[in-house]
View 1: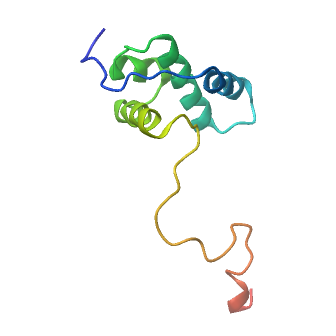
View 2 (view 1 turned 135 degrees about the vertical axis):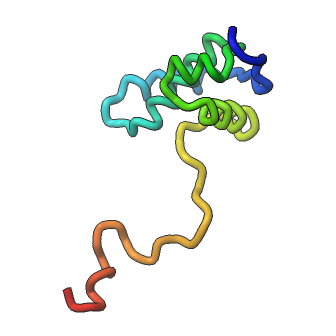
Length: 104
């Protein structure tokens, strides 16, 4: 095993692993969720794998593996992004409102 022993050794519940397996099998899921699910399944099978080795197997960067290990240890298991900081959007992404004020 290359690298130091990870400081966040995770234990997943059966519900977490079932969600990860279902996510990996779905073609309609977002790519980043599928990669995170693969990482969770890898870490469930090999909890002491280094960040570098896990990043190489799953195809993530080493900082991303560190981030998800820490996040799952502190906040619990989730495949979705955390809420973004900042002001909410003032117009809808479907195109309503941004061009109506200029007569387009």
